[in-house]
Length: 156
Image (cartoon, rainbow, N blue to C red; front, side, top):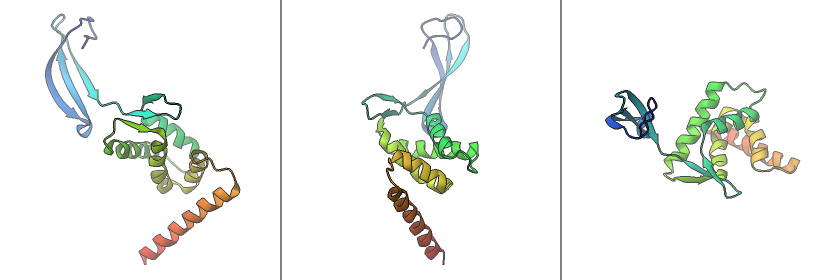
């Protein structure tokens, strides 16, 4: 690891600790050249495979941007969007794969978004699933209504 102060090509690890609930390792390092100390963090990079065949690193911010568009004009806070993105990332990482298709990322968003706001869910699903007619919206709304009825029966 290159020293950020003097740019020396080597450093020595002084201490290592797990971070972020075990998904990362934080290392305290010392430069043998200038003697300064610095901290690095190592994480496993989750890759997303796009339909085009290109892969890119997973970012929570991309999830937040997409969901924010669906939630435009809806009562969803930035904290709720960040929480949703964290839930999606946790669900994806729990699968234990180093690369995940973008289609599965979209599927992982649908459940938490449906719980957050059903209108935003319909907006997101209409784009994600490529709704082409009113019948597609009607089918999805029917499924939402049936889920509500089922929850009402379970609550009784």
